[in-house]
Image 1: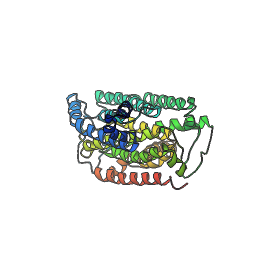
Image 2 (image 1 turned 180 degrees about the vertical axis):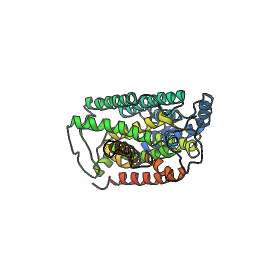
Image 3 (image 1 turned 90 degrees about the vertical axis):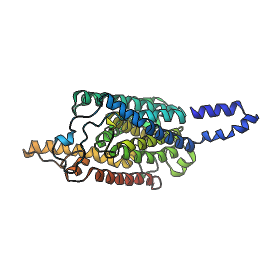
Image 4 (image 1 turned 30 degrees about the horizontal axis):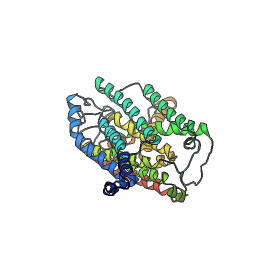
Length: 382
């Protein structure tokens, strides 16, 4: 909105004395300025409304008054804070801060509208899931098949929407690999649509699985989105994209403003979610943020860069898959219950080994920073 208002004022007052006075408004044409504005706005909104939202959730009794899955499975040696009673659905604060900031500072093109629409849909799914858990005071929310079905339908909608638009079809049909200069496939609709769906659904669920310790998921999200702030800016800048030999996507620069809003909202929420957490984001936030990261990666043709930058999310998801497979294999063929990890996702494995929660989180932050650096390094290693 600020961009359109500033340009309207500049056009209406062009050639007048008032136009000279309003000339500083040209700064709104710069993506870097609007990205900083979006990040700061989202941060301040989160910090300002955070205490009120937490108090509101407490009044509505939106607290988790049951043991989480990790606690039910056995003793967590180093967990010293009881999480029961902490309000959840804090993802509402994140989503609202992102939406308001992006609408204020970004240009409303197809890429930003599609991203924000997906963010709202996944936040709604997560909200329903959180509500069911709280209503029944149980770890079981809505049916997993229902949740996955909605995610798949959303991802398919995004994939086919891009494919049916001639100007954006290449975002689906051209598959780009890090460390490689040119698309590995061109015109591969089936492969491209499958990769799009896998990226969005996989990212959404991977962040959801990571959300098990205070500050873990939101902190890693902030780190990953910083990497994509750089990647989206380059993708939307024709000269930089050509120099670094990455796909140029017209309008992708506005996704940089969105990434700035996500970063600001993540930092603001981390203020209240750091150990010991005053509020949890719940599925309302984790499903939405994960899906948003996936969609942004698809829109700049960098899904594999997301797999690298989001290495912690991938590790969490893979640990769950390996745990399930090992349990099924051992029961069927070894007639015993043997598992690779003490508990999955893997952050609970380290808790069971006696690591303090803050120790796990900080070390996962370090790993996430390393993954983000590697993802950015692919820009020069082609």
